[in-house]
Structure formats: C-alpha cells, structure tokens
Image (cartoon, rainbow, N blue to C red; front, side, top):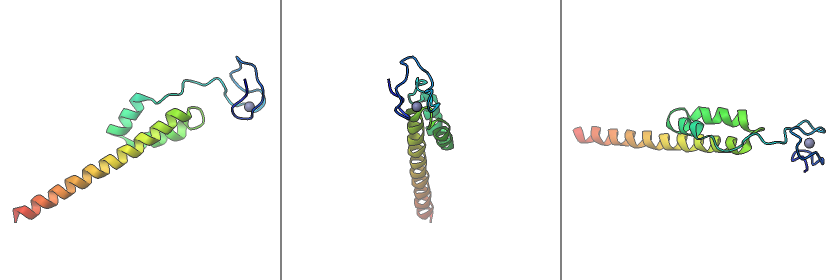
Length: 95
Ligand SMILES: [Zn+2]
C-alpha cells in the first residue's frame, strides 16, 4: 500500500510510514458518540477541543466533533434567543 501522507510504497502491515513517520494503520477513526452527545448537550467547547486533539490522527472523528460543536452552539443560541423573545413577550403582555 502507499502512505496516505507522502505516497511512499510501504509494507501492508506497517503501522508507521518509515519515510515520513506518519501513522498509517488507522487507529479506529469514527465519530465518537459519547463525545458528540456531551458536546451537544452540555459542553460545545469539548467538540472544538477534540477537533484539535483528533484532527491529525482521527480526521473523521475530529470532523464530527466539530460539526456537533457547531450544531450545539447554533441550537443553544436559537433556544436562548427564543426564550429571550418569550420573556420579552410575556413582559410586554404583563403591562
Ligand atoms: Zn509516508
């Protein structure tokens, strides 16, 4: 197979490319459900942190952590906006 990083032909069972030192045998790279859940429900910043932690080794997991962070931020922004709007309407209705 070829190293995805430098293109060097390397042994099929190689874990690390002897030429550029990049890890070839992919460590399991799939979206992390617990991280995505926690990112979405409570800590959007976690997704952003995990994106930077994973972006070299686990690009897929990193991408999804970032996507969920963005979804979460947008979602909570809309929710707080709606509650703000609701509070304003109720306040206006009270007078
Ligand atoms: Zn390489």
